[in-house]
Each structure stands twice: as C-alpha cells, then as structure tokens.
Length: 283
Image (cartoon, rainbow, N blue to C red; front, top):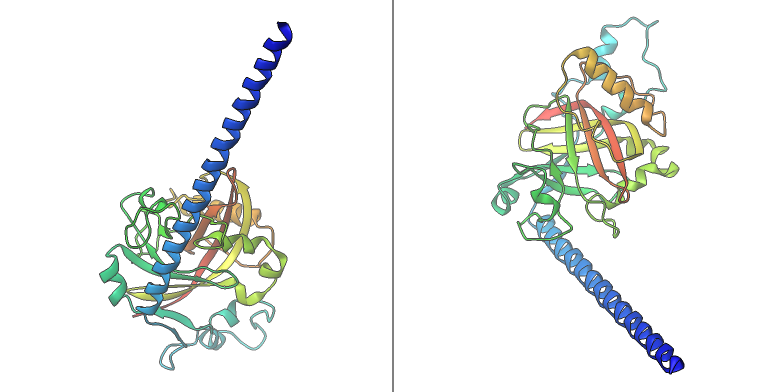
C-alpha cells in the first residue's frame, strides 16, 4: 500500500514538473515571437523613415569662420595649439543635416536626428511630456516594447541646457541604443573618428566631442539637467569625466554644455556616454 502511495506521489510530482516545463516553454516561445514581431515592426518603420527623409552631410561653409584660424590670429607663433589635441580637427568635420518636413508629418513630436559613429545609432529623436511613453511606443505611436530614441522631457532642444539627455532601450539585436555598448570596447574608444557625435535639429546642426564613456550600476546622478551654480556644474563635469574608462583628453569648464546618451547594459547596469558641444551651424 505504501509502495503504491509513493508511486502515485512520484507520478503527481512528475506531472507537475511536465506542466511547469510546458508553461515555461510556451511563455518563452511567446516572448520570442513578441520580440521578433517588435523588431520587425521597428525595422519596417525605420526603412520607411529613411526612404522619406533627406539626410546629407554639410561641409564647413566658406563664409563660416574657421575657428582654428581665427584663434591663431589671436596668438603669436610661440603660443600654438597642442598638435595632439583632436578638438581642432573635429571642428572641420561635416555636419549632418536632416530635412524634417516629412518627419514632422509622421510624428509632430520629432525634435532631432542623432548619429553616433561606430554604432548603429542613426535615428530620429522624439520627445513626449514624460519619459515613459516612448519606452513602449515607436516613432509612429504604435505600442511596442522596443520603444524609440527620445529626449528627456525636461530638456529644450532649441536652447541647449547644461545637460541634454537622450535615452533608448539597449535592444539585443543592436537596434535603438543596443549598439551603444560598443563604446566600452577598446577598438571603439581608441578610434578618433568615433569621438564626434552629430545632432541635427530643425534649427541647428551641431557637433559634440565625446569626453566620457562608462558602465555603472543604475543611478540617476548623471541625468541632472539644472545646476545651482557654475561650481556645482564644474564638479558634475569632473565627476562624469573621472568615471570614463578612457581618457579622451578633453578640457571642460562651467561654460560648456553637454550631451548625455543613456541605455541599459543589463537589468542592473547602465551604459553612458557624455560629449560636449563644440560647434553648431544655424539653419
């Protein structure tokens, strides 16, 4: 009798394990299908956006002062700029200029276009009244867990604040900010041409020089947008610079304005990039 009871108990446990395994299998299958569906929707959306958007590189205009030359005029021959400082070369990089005509028709909340060398990041940037909506909505407003690339709701795109912040999900397939993880690799941060971020808005094309890249346990101390004093901002800049896994040899001061890109590395950590504004061209 006892033997039969033990056998029944084993069968029940075995059946329960089969049920649990089945539930987990179908849940995982559902997640994979949903993930692929989200990815395919985003890919189709982005293909449409690129087909209907004119994007071009704009070189330094002849009428635009060359900052390197103008500063040379103010210095004598014994006070030359350090030849190792890449800043002066970055000033000559082409701007990225985007025609927002069709983008605005597709989504009135579009505010910019962001391009980061050495990554897949080449997207229109949107902004909502909060930092929640575009975590699970795409550019066209469709519900989607891939979300979109979005500007912090506290920022004003037409007036650079001390810290302008852009977020997106770090998707495993490399979409959105999934490839921002590249900045942690030596072959990314040691390649000088990757150190320039290009941003185009309806009013201005701009260049930003990277000064810090790092991975950090989730915190909100780097997404501060307002500062009580110049000294407070200077301390913030030094703190962000000192976190970097690579020394970009960039000088910073309280007159600078910076761009911050942020995404998840995993459930516990973030990947962050900071760059300072170095040049802009009004449109």
